[in-house]
Amino acid sequence: MSKGIGRARRLVLNAAAKVNLILEVLGKRDDGYHELVTVMQAVDLSDRITLEDADVLELASSPGVPADGRNLALRAAMALREAAGVTRGARITLDKRIPVAAGLGGGSTDAAAVLAGLNRLWGVRWPAERLEELAVELGMDVPFFLRGGAALGTGRGERLTEIPSAVLGLVLVNPRFPVSTAETYGRVTPAMYSDGRRARTMAEALARRGAGRVAASLYNGLEPAARQGYPQIAQMEAALMAAGALGAMMSGSGPTVFGVARSWEQARQIRGRVARGAWECWAVRTLRGPAIRIRAGGA
Ligand code: C5P
Image 1 (cartoon, rainbow, N blue to C red):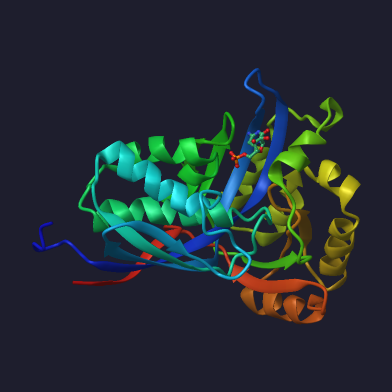
Image 2 (spheres, rainbow, N blue to C red; image 1 turned 135 degrees about the horizontal axis):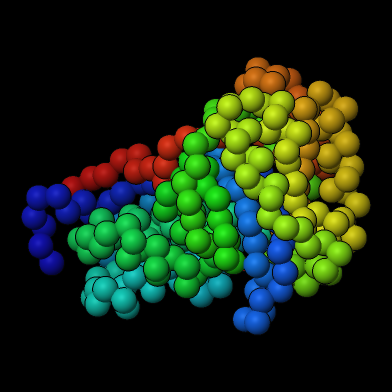
């Protein structure tokens, strides 16, 4: 193993969450997935990931998060190691801040961070396009996190076009229980399908950087499916609106909901009003730059 210049032995990364400002379900595909049009937006609620060079591949995670092959971050490491023919291992430490199975892409952003970080730590040096090909095999949200900012996603959500993004203050509210993505999609009926046109309206709202326009354009076709099982979703949205949010919507397959604020200061006020024992709340800013950031590296 070379210890040459440019080969770090330890990296610390930030892996940001996302919200879906738009999620339209167009229909069911022959492969069992749903055809989507979505606008994904990175936000500054992040997990912290440490990668250290090691002989074997191993993962340590926060309590309650599986550390075996069910963990997408470990699967990402195994996939890159095999695809790039690497014989090294790595010690991966996940410090989770993003709630698990929450509709915020927490597992997917960890997987993207592991791909980007090990690409560097192991000296693989694959270009972004090749990492994206591997990313999509791990989950449809994973390629988005290799980019960040805001993006339009089509197909199963994995075909991405970058769109201009605005810095907005949002409030995230999570009911402290997980919801399976497959379960929410399993409740979708054709009555919940839409034609994909709302995404264009959202892209225009983001380009004009108006929180009011963004709030008025929010849409999630999965929300009726998730509401059937979880009345808390409507309650959390009502609480955000009562606290002054310009608009509120569920993110991804839920159960986290988010409210759009007029400003960062107002986002913090809303967070203060909505925070209760049963719910976890964050005031966050949207990110115009990368979702994965290397915070520190060491030789
Ligand atoms: O891609 P990911 O692993 O996150 O998807 C989890 C599950 O969500 C899939 O197994 C599928 O049931 C559902 N899904 C879907 N259509 C999509 C994305 C996900 O039906 N476009």
